[in-house]
Length: 79
Image (cartoon, rainbow, N blue to C red; front, side, top):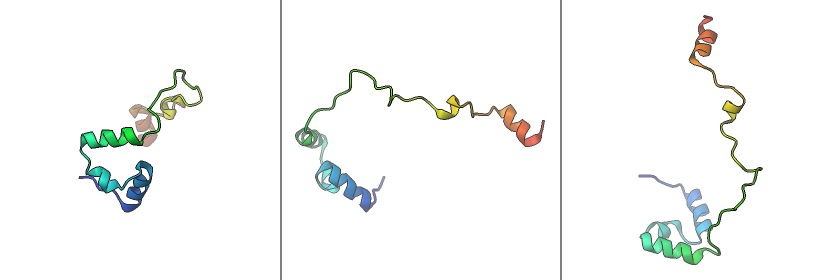
C-alpha cells in the first residue's frame, strides 16, 4: 500500500479543505457529494485550443537526439 508523508498530507488537506485522513475514510458516494458541494463551479474545457500550451511531443525526438543501436555501438566500439 502507498503511504503519504506528513507535509504532503498537510498540502492535500489545505487544497481539499478537510483532513486528508478524514477524506480517505469516505466511501464513494461521500466523496462525490463532498466534491460536488465543495466545488465552486464545474469542470469545463476550453472550446478552442491555445497554441501556447499545446503539447509538442518529446523534445528529444524534435531535436533528433535519439541514437540507434548501430550509432551507439559505433561510438562505443569504433566500428
